[in-house]
Length: 390
Image (cartoon, rainbow, N blue to C red; front, side, top):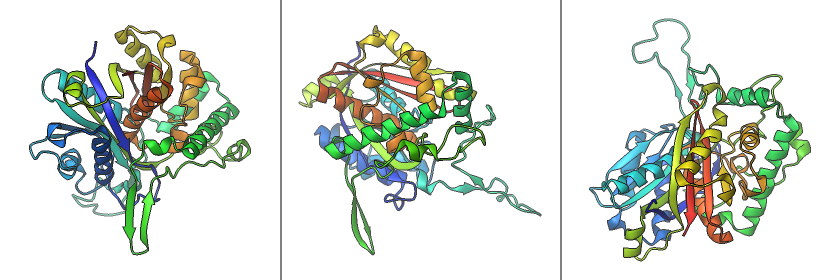
């Protein structure tokens, strides 16, 4: 049985693309989330001896130093190492899995783990400028065009492939997207999501603005409005900006340690890490990743699907979730109970950590036992982690 626990954590509000957090960097956001996680966990900074941060797209001049700078700027010991990890959309969960492995192997006692991405700063790149373009036009590549060259498809096109395979209607996709927005609206209005968020002050010539609310959410969404949106990836497709995840800026961080160390420091953990699994699937239908990953994690934990009280499954696309729901025969009432990435947005490296924070808090709130977090991963992968309320 795993002795690894998630003590507590925090996240930033998720800023809209070019929105309230646009002036920050991925490192800035990770520092804010980390400071929030440290404060809420009531952990002594001196006891944190490793930082692991998921980050998918490097979007600032000093991005290669991100995890190390998070350690230094968060006030950790100068000898605290920092690791940047990239398992694409699974990075936030895999950061926690790697934290668990470091602790189990005696490499660390307490780890600050999480993820961050600042998609508003994604650059346009040129691959020919350094050695001279000589003649003709020069092409700039949009870093947000995360096309899988092996699968010869964008992520949106892989979602359309799932639609073809599972015959999921546009109406069903829009209805699921509406559910995400409605649940997020309730969670925001009740203050439930605010419990996860560390507010950030943005100072400018116009004054100071506090960002403490997810900006991408559209509580006024209607099924009629969703139905009017045009397909984004194929002329005759079904995936639209309304039934796909939002492009946003955000970070999330968690304090991970052993139960023995938590007791020694008189910390109060939220959940225990029971098991995790990472696996591969056909790249052209990468969204199906949770389908093999969840059973693998359950088998390692000695659990069955019926044992899981709550699920957080990333909403990369409505059709992607619905395909997984169909294959796994999920009870939707147990899934994404406070809305998901369609409403809140998906800052790639941060989302997995957000899901772990959210499910850990929700298990405590509902006094339920087991939770499962899972994400599909670009390139054709899936990741899942099982946690247990303490």
